Structure formats: structure tokens, C-alpha cells
Amino acid sequence: MTHYGSPSEWTDLLESQVPVILDVVISTWETMPPPAGNELEDTVSEALCRALRQSRNRCDLPFRIDTQMVELDPEAGQDQGRMDIVFSPPVPREEIYFCLECKRLNVREADGVRPYFAEYVRYGMFRFVRGQYSRSVQSGGMLAFVLDGDLARAMAGVESNVGNHHRELGMTTPGIFRASAARPNDDRVRETEHNRGANLGSFIIQHLFMAGDPNTPLRPPRTPGAITKPKKKRSRQMSNITS
Image (cartoon, rainbow, N blue to C red; front, side, top):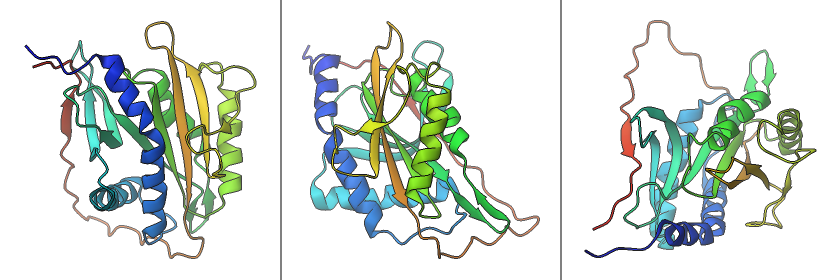
């Protein structure tokens, strides 16, 4: 029987590639047309994933890139939730991956701008901290689509909410952003460190704030009675594999 390396070796390989992943995500976003001021999260995520696959081919990036992947609890087999964008290295261990959880911020609507700062923390960061995502690795990413283009306001709003929940997030006081070790000279990127307990250990979240265009038109409202097809989920059983 041939073993392809220990989990720690594969994790180290993935961690060494985090700066490359962030570079590709940011450079790809910059080539995309800006989304509508109130575009749906899944629509933007899927468009970015398609563009990332093209960028991967041009750059020979050694990762499979998927969207809307479903992670199953390794013991109970229960659905842990959909992961927005997943980078999987070519290793025979399905639990080794880098997850980007995408969230909209400063969404422009006809009646004003809706911030969604609390949702970023509650339905994004907590999924990493509680081990729903990325249980077997040491880092993941939050990708904010700042649809009105006001990055400073978006970053300040998220940081304030992080501070309000920093103990629940396993952060030391006062629970603020720090410069990203993976991309230290980019003002659009920050990181936070979290203690997930003895079983899961320390975890780093990379926070990417990507600007939209404040002048893009709004997405028209859906026609009443329109039928939409339900999305198919792709299951991803996170289990140890050797051959």
C-alpha cells in the first residue's frame, strides 16, 4: 500500500499556496465587469468561479476550483452547508481545501444601501470558527462583494461587528483586523486569528474586500410568478483516503 503523505504535510502544502490563491482571486476580480448594485450573491460567486477557472488555466494554478460544494459531517454524514468557492489541491485527501465564503456588503437598493455587516460575521465567519467548514486546515477566506464600492465603510462596519462578537469568535481582545501576512501591502485584504478549541486549534481567516461600481444599474425585480429551477448540490464527503 502506498501512502501519499500525512494530513499535516498536505495542509502545509495548501498553506504555502494561500498567497497565490489570493493573488489569482484579486487579479481575476479586476478583469470582470462590475455586478449590478443589488446583484444576488450566488450569481456573482458563480461568475467569479467561472472566471477563476479560466485564470487557473492561464496561470497553471494547481487547484481544482468548484462552487456550491456541500461538506458532509465525517461522522453523522449531515449537510454542513454549501461552500461558495473551493480550491482543492491535487492530493488524495478530500478534507484538504481552501474555502472562500462569499458575502455581499453595501448592497444598493432603490430605497437605500443595506450594509449586511452582521450577516458577514454571523453567516460567514462563524461557519469557519465552529468547524462547519475547513475543520482539517488552518486557514480559509471571506470574500466581500462591496457593491457600492465604498471599501472603507464596509471594512469598518465588518470590523465593528467582529469586535462585538470577538469572544464568541475565539479572538483576543479587542478583536480587530490585522494586516494580512499573505498579502501585507494590499489595503483591501485583512486577516483575523481565531482559537477554535483544543480539537481544531488556531485558524486564520483572510478577508478580501472587492469593490463594485457605484454607478452600475440595479438588477430588475423578478417577474411575479416566475419559475426558478432548484439548484443541484454537489456532495463532498470529507474523509481520509489512502491508496
